[in-house]
Image 1: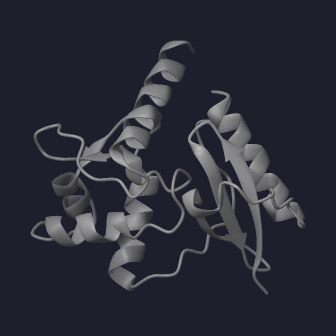
Image 2: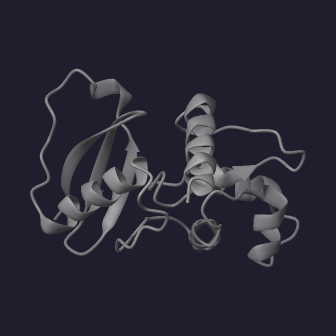
Length: 158
């Protein structure tokens, strides 16, 4: 069974979806900002909202939610590697391709990164170009900048 809720973040409304056992999606819900909020109807969705609130308040650096993103084996490997990027740090597409033992797959890593269904929790915003350039982000580069700056400021204050 799929259940959903929404969460009001500093970056706009997030839509969170889960099955019976894990979070399956966290994405920006820009199209439905005007609709009423959807309250979490399960303990799992309540935990997701709580952990996101703590993250945005600078009180959480690591999410401990059960996750079940749907994707190919390659995408799963990339998303797993993204979760290993420490808070307030970043990696290049090349570094991710090396981490998954597929050094020539930089473009495919970029495509998998862009298809990450659990934004913020699986920190695709921490992946940048090899030159340090802030390349695309499904939520928009402005949000990516905000997230990276938020993590850098939070890390400095601790």
